[in-house]
Length: 213
Image 1 (cartoon, rainbow, N blue to C red):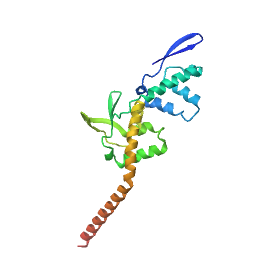
Image 2 (cartoon, rainbow, N blue to C red; image 1 turned 90 degrees about the horizontal axis):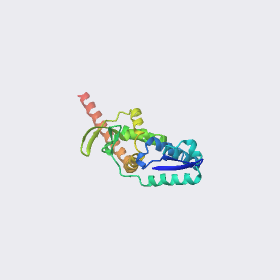
Image 3 (cartoon, rainbow, N blue to C red; image 1 turned 30 degrees about the vertical axis):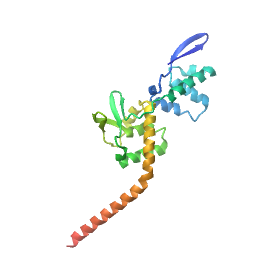
Image 4 (cartoon, helix red, strand yellow; image 1 turned 90 degrees about the vertical axis):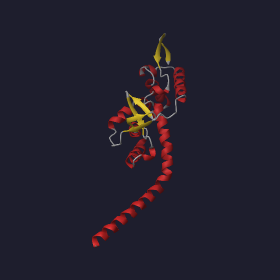
């Protein structure tokens, strides 16, 4: 989308995003990082991040122009695609969300829980690096992904290139899953712990019996 700005009697055209899918996670994080600050700082960072306009010029924009540009950005965000895409492509490499979140390991979920507690916004690339991993095999809609080894440093850098709308739809999907899981997890853990204790007691009793013979 083109934005025409008049300055010193001259008109110059700058490029603004055409759709929210063009906004990477890295750019989105820059925008939301200033949302708690002043409205002027928020507008300045948003426009300079989502356009090729120099920050110096952004500061010199008339309030009327700022309002028009921010309105256009708001419209684009409201039209974003909210459909979850479980398989995405970054630099020619396919990454996919865990095909069955109910099969997620306790280690994966514990790392996600820690990242959320430490601050969802600052840890979003790391969170996506846990939820999305390289596709190792695919047949139509069915696929398998790399196993989780806890090493997300490199992959989290790649996740910064995800589009903001992909991240948002994935987080909404995971949020609903986590909410459902939080309602059943305590009772499940209690039941499973009791099963483990009973199994362990049986094994100890059997070993003791074997030793007394």
